[in-house]
Image 1 (cartoon, helix red, strand yellow):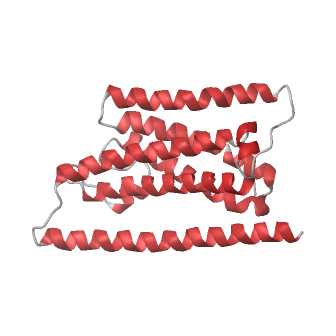
Image 2: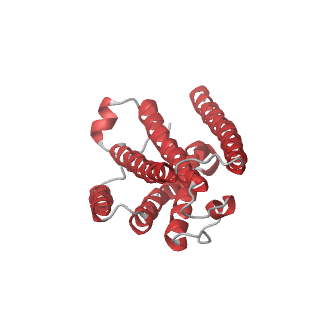
Image 3: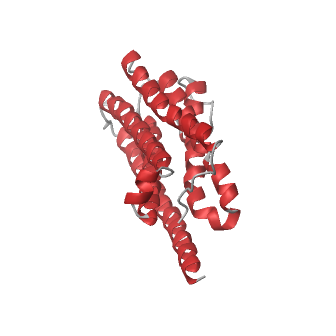
Amino acid sequence: MATQTTVTSRRTAGFGNILLNGAIVAALLAAIYAASLLLEQKGLELDNESVWCAIRASGAVAYLLLAASMAWGILLSGKLVKRRVPAALALELHTYLAWTAVGMSVYHAYLLLFSRFFDYGVLDLLIPFVGPYEPFAVGIGIVGLYVMILTSASFYLVDRIGYRSFRLLHYLTYAGFLLATVHSVMAGTDGALFNSFYLAISVSLFLPTLARILARRRREPARIYTS
């Protein structure tokens, strides 16, 4: 009982830290954006090409981090990780990768506010399917980001919603990754090379998952780390 109480307290504290850090980062980003608007009024602007390159690069990095989080989550159900990595450390790494992917995705979207190629406003980044550039493709990315935030936050809600509900909710990670892939292919401007790269990563993640699902029909469900 004491161990369970400790785990619950750690999760609650972790979720509180996420909310606090998120609020601090949001305030900092808002201050930077407000400062950039003031500088623009004085004729000082960021180089548009550099901003656009940063948008594309941050999007690719966010996708790789999300893929890494997915891959590690799949490995968590395998014997190799269970035998070699302590459960708490394995889950902590999974959580860290997930939230880092969320943070980089937010940064990717945030940079659109500084691009003069398209006139993005804050609401365009919060409300799906209303932006000035490829509203459907970008809207899918926004929905995918919300799904990522929901599934990442579910790590801290296991004790409130129960393990079964947590596991069902966590399956939305696949939907979030699929939305991120569609967004990258449809909204990206890097051409066939990057599109093939995105699709290859998707296949490399979904095929092992399908194989695992089929294998589970022949045996009891594998244990997933929750503490």
